[in-house]
Length: 228
Image (cartoon, rainbow, N blue to C red; front, side, top):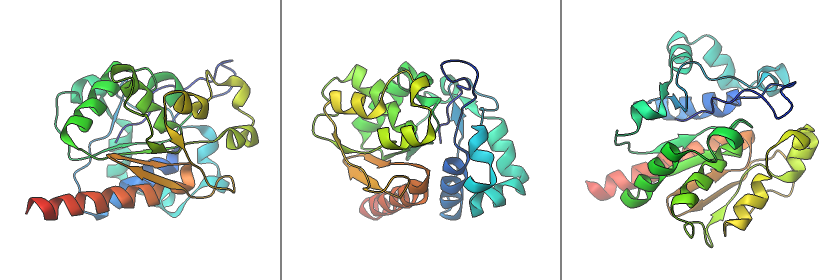
């Protein structure tokens, strides 16, 4: 599981970071499936959390579980750096939402190399919201890799409703389309939507987290059956 390490919006007056429920809601899907989870971020240590994601209106059942779960808090508070885990082989990769990803995951050589290894090994990758920006790091290594790939992510409408679009370094949707991706999304903002194409499982927004994580678990179960 990968979370952003970037905390500041462009004007440095508002804070961002990882969106908490896109960690917790996926984390518990993986734990209940019996997976061993490694949590990482570009810088390691405790990643910043978007203050908005900690407000009551965005609190999910899994966030409440996390707040009473010492071990999960330890894993979140002491992430490995991407450099430390870069040479490790994983069965799957999950990348959480958070505006910070537009700064430190969209142009990150370590992320690009990790996703390239996933591509070579047919390792499934699930990404949610702004975490989908990580594929832009891969497209820098393989410029045509997203051509025709069905993908989703946080939409311009959702950005506008959050009123954060003036601070962002680029439009995620525009960059994905410019890289050749076929961008899909839910008709109603902030409702669940998931696209699956090749190794990629992408969720549009935080509401899509559990669906994307469950799709990743299902994909791994199928591959395990094939291997057996």
